[in-house]
Length: 451
Ligand code: NDP
Ligand code: 2IT
Image 1 (spheres, rainbow, N blue to C red):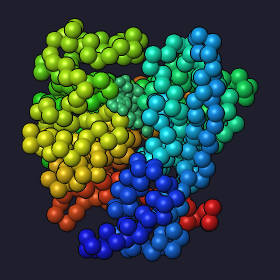
Image 2 (cartoon, rainbow, N blue to C red):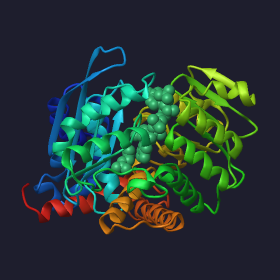
Image 3 (tube, helix red, strand yellow):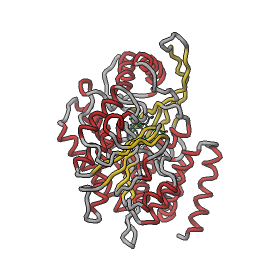
Image 4 (cartoon, protein in one colour):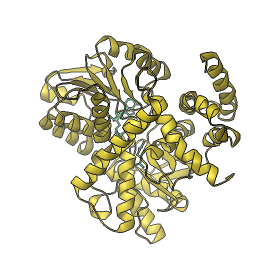
């Protein structure tokens, strides 16, 4: 298909999506990237075209929006907005995280839910796609305020979810503490102890390795990509953004594989430690971020190195870059700087961290680029394993879960190669992930009729 024909097909497909979802720019961005990969494939497979599968995939099955009132520590009434996007249930119950961040809105959650459908399919586990959250900002709130908010949020959400209906988990701003408060309130309201959440504590139905899974999985995916060139992470300089759950465990696994992680960041700036963030320093970062809830700038007071206020780490020379903070955190100029400095692997722990022009830059240069929906699927894959253990009322050992996670990441990599390898031998992981994730969902939708 010529570039002109593809552009015309994409424009025709996108026009109603943009009109119906006015102003939801992140959602447009996510759908457009997938449309560019899938429309040529759909032209060759007209059964999907006639059933308008891609059009149906771009419309949520259900959107829930609700008021979340709660009382802060001063006794003042606060009001937030809650959401759950139930995007697609063709291959299993809706599954995906909850994000608590002041920027959360309908468009951001729809983009995340849309990505989740294809990501969950790639894991090969029976999970549909969903996403939810709130514009609530947990930063600076007391534990009591976070609990009050979570309980009020669940007072509405509980009627829409269930272990066979919709199974939330964490995302930005939602970790073990928040999942605990929400699970507790669900249990109280429904009077049942079920696997309605993943990312639970180990003592109450959580899976070992779920905490580590996204960061570990993104690293396993980078290692698989490197293997296609007879290379490995051993001795590589790695830049990572973010300092939350995904960034922390990516740092841990990269270091175990013999790589040296030299940056971490948060929304205020990034730290550069040329000596590398070794396990001792990482343990300190985990305490800083997960317990004391401080800022990454404090790292340099303790360990030296440089702190760059208001900047992202992409101008630091590296072999491998792992964006693990948020969407659109690598722009075109930053992508070009990465390449100029010799970076030849990008493995995305975050969802949609690279803008479309940055992705084009990676692909045109022929580097190893693993898009989020493939590279960060280890988190939700291990959530799938948590659901299985909950259903069986059993728990697997650390080694068992990690081995399954590792194998799933290898399989996702193989799927990307199968659907993304071009005649030149170049592996287009974007096309591979999009087509590879699509086929199973599309076939299930065809089989289930016009629903
Ligand atoms: P956390 O809340 O644990 O950490 C988020 C990190 O990213 C923090 O360091 C935060 O800094 C930073 N960050 C968040 N928003 C912004 C922003 N707008 N600009 C700059 N920095 C920002 O979240 P996770 O580690 O769980 O999630 C990180 C990414 O990984 C997200 O894109 C998420 O969707 C994705 N993901 C997460 C999975 C999981 O299992 N948790 C699974 C798959 C993907 P600060 O503290 O200053 O806000
Ligand atoms: O984006 C993601 O895949 C997640 N936040 C994890 C979702 C999940 O259900 O484990």
